[in-house]
Amino acid sequence: MINQDISFQFSDDGCKVYALCEGRKIGSIFFVKIGSDKIMISESEIEPDYKDTDIELLLTLEIIKLARNQHRKIMSICPYITNIFKTHPEFDDVRLLNNSR
Image 1 (tube, one colour):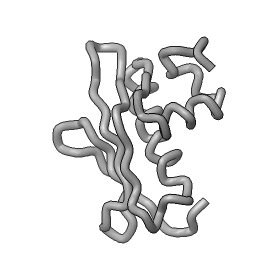
Image 2 (cartoon, helix red, strand yellow; image 1 turned 90 degrees about the vertical axis):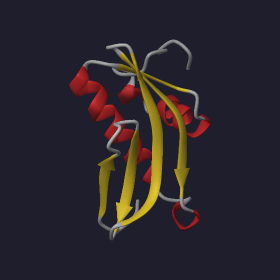
Image 3 (cartoon, one colour; image 1 turned 135 degrees about the vertical axis):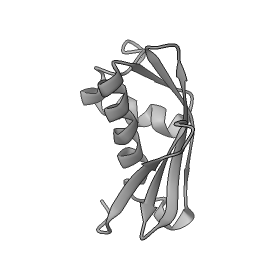
């Protein structure tokens, strides 16, 4: 885990969430809402200095909060985020494909 203050911000179009450290974008997840009940995560980007931190997990948690608040299920075609879902069964309530472990 990182010891810096990280904040999160959704883009104006609502299709990207950014991780910010001291106002600098250090990571993001791009996603699309499908219908009224799904979110698909397509890619994540993390700045090289933050590759070995929990930034992707923290960004994923922001998408999970959104999904829970909007009663949506999440699917991911991003291998990094897919791996997070595979290793965290506590997110199964929002994971669209629960049987694909």
